[in-house]
Every structure is written in structure tokens, then in C-alpha cells.
Amino acid sequence: MHNLGAASPFGRLFILLFIAWRNIWRNPVRSVLTIAALVGGLIMVILYASLLEGMTRQMVQYATEVTTGHLQIHRQAFIDDQDLYATLPWPYLERIERDFPTIHIAPRLYAAGLASSATTSTGVLIKAVDPEREAEVTTTLSHVRSGEVNLGIADTTSTGLVRYNVVVGAQLAKNMKLSPGSELVLVTQAADGSIGNNLYRVAAVLRPLEPNFDRMGVLMSIKAYRQLMYLDSGFHELAIKLEDIDALPEVQAALDAEMQTLQVAQPLDKLGGLAVVRNWRQLTPAISDMLQLSRSMLLLIGLIVVGLASLGMLNTMLMAVHERAHEFGILLCLGMKRRWLLLMVLLESFFLALISAVVGSVLGTLLARYLEEHGIDFSASMPDGYDWAGMVFEPVMKGYLEPGQIVEACLLMFAVTFVASLIPAWRSVRLKPAEVLR
Image (cartoon, rainbow, N blue to C red):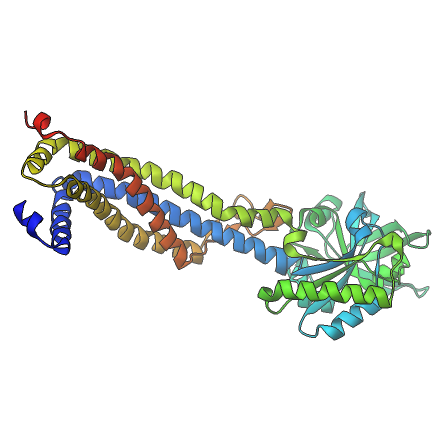
């Protein structure tokens, strides 16, 4: 210990590092079991972080690319109670398209009605789109279970009445026993107060995308909607897709300003309310809240898992201190300062955590990459995916690993193990040489 006291600070640290490294292998079985527990905990944290990131990315993709788009514009009365007459004029669409040439826009109209087939009748939600514009904003029309999406004219009757094609949701098709080629009658109250009704041909059945549309949805073209509803004044919803989602705040602010300008140039009736621009987070608050909570959930789960694994290290270090109490007493009698003894015990814990971090990071990365490539397939039990927060997701849950997640998981493990090692380290410096040498 004389050499330790006479050495430079860096020399002392090097000597302590060497001693600490040798000490952890004095009982290799116990050290290996401790490292295995920490490695297992770190792997679980990395896999959980990967799955959580993959799920949140899937949520964002479904919220923006499949049905909703990045932004939507409605009138306030339509947001509040789906008011049929709360429409935005068609010149608004032309002006937005002219002033924002880099964005993609798709108008939509909605109505409620009664659908009848050869076997049954049920209430439905009618949604009208422009197929060409809709394909530029969302992938709704590409998620087909059977048939072929064609919202054009099916045929013309002998009296000259045009009959259009429609597309229906999967659960609605099952309940009403519909398939491509089936006939469907829609009855509703038109915008002029009359009873709108027409006969349609089912062109395709969509896969589950949204629970409500899946159970009640009938998709048609805007031309077919006008024929049924006698509503030519405008559209209820404008879905917008950006080329760069990072520009969302700026584009939303610019569209807000554009709406104010348009409402001055072409005033809207007071009953329908003002035009409101909302982003996908505002449109799907459950998913937005999930994204905000994801990091907190990751930290909480990580603390629990790594904390449980660190209990093994705490037990190891307490046993080591207890077994070497006589040795520590001799070192103190020879003049070793208590702070160096404290540092030596902490370094032993650090080496255990370091080995665990290296091994756990490598194994966790390999497993996370496998999940990213293949995922966890639930299609055997959930062939149509699973419903969460008002959206239906693919039955294959894939992970997504970011390098920062590995670094954060390792730092979390180092922090927890350091706190756990303070107890045996403090116990070692509290030893009284006279008592332990008796």
C-alpha cells in the first residue's frame, strides 16, 4: 500500500483498475451469473425499445399514409356534428391547389344512409372521393381484399339512368353477404330534402383499415355522390399530404393564413362555422398521446427490468464485501485510505456493468435486427390485423432499432448498477479494522 500512496493519481487509478479487474474473477461463477442477469435485462430493454419504436412508426404511417393524410381541413360544424351542409366551396380547393403546388390534396364528402342487399339492410356511412386525387394522398384504395377498385360507371339502365360502382368495408360485406358483382341499394335523405336512392354494383371489398368504415363504410366517387345527394355546393373534408413531413408546422400555419384570406374573399355562412386546419396529431389524439408517452414508458420499463437485474449485482457485491471484510481490514490497517477502498469496490461494479453492456448490446442488436426484418407474426390468430386507437394495424409487429436506443439502454444500466453498488461500497468503508480482524 506504500506504493499506492506514493504513486501519482493516474498510477493509483491504474493499480486500482488492475486490482478491481482481478477481484471480479476471484469467484468466476458468481460473476458470470451476475453478468448474465444484467445482459438479460439489457437485451429485454433493447427489444422493448425496438418494438415500441416500430409500433409508433407504424402508427404514424397508418395515421398519415393509409387514411388520414398529414393535414385535413373541415368546417367547425362538420367537426362538431357531421353537418351535411357544412361544406367548403370548390373554389377553395382550386385556390389551395394553385398557391401550394408542392402538396397533394384530395376532397371528400360524407353522408349517412340505409343500405339494402338481397338478404338484409343496415345503416351505412357513405364516403365519396376523387379516385385520382385520393391515390396521391392516401393508400386506402390499394388495400383491397377482393375485387378491383373501380368507382366509375358500372352500366346504364334502359331509361338512361347511370349506375355506379362502389367499394365496401370488409365487415359490412360479411354482414350483408356482399361480394364483387353484388347489387346494393342505398337510400338517404338528400341535401334538398328529397329521398335519394339508387342501385349500385359492388366492385371491391377493402381490407380492414378503420373500425367504423370496416363495419359501415361504402366508398363511391364524387360524381355518384352528387347524383345520390344532390349536393354540388362543395366538399366536407380536404385531406392533404406533404412531400416533407418536417415542414408540417410551417405548412399548417400557411394554410391557416390562406383560409382566413379565402373566408374574407368568399365568406362562408355562419351556420357552418369557420374553416379549421388540423394536423394528424390533432385528428388522432390517441396515437399522438401514445407517441408522447412512449419515451416515459420506455424509461419506466427499463428502470424496472434493469433494476431487477441489478439486484443480482447488489447481492454479488454484498457477498464479496462480506467475504473480504478481513482483507479490507488489513488494507485499512496498512494505511489505505477509505476513499480508495470505496473507489475499488465501485470499479468492480463498473467492470461487471461494462462487460454486460458490451455483450448485451451485441446480442440485443442482433435480436432487434431480426425483429426489424421479420417481426412477430400474429396473422394466425389475427388475420385482419388488430384494432387500436380507432385504426387497424397489420398483424405483423415489426421493430425498429435506432443506435441512440442502445446508448440510452446502456447508460440506464450503468446508472442503475452504480446506484446499486453504492450500498456495498459504503458498507466497505464503514468497516472498523479492529472489529473485522478479531
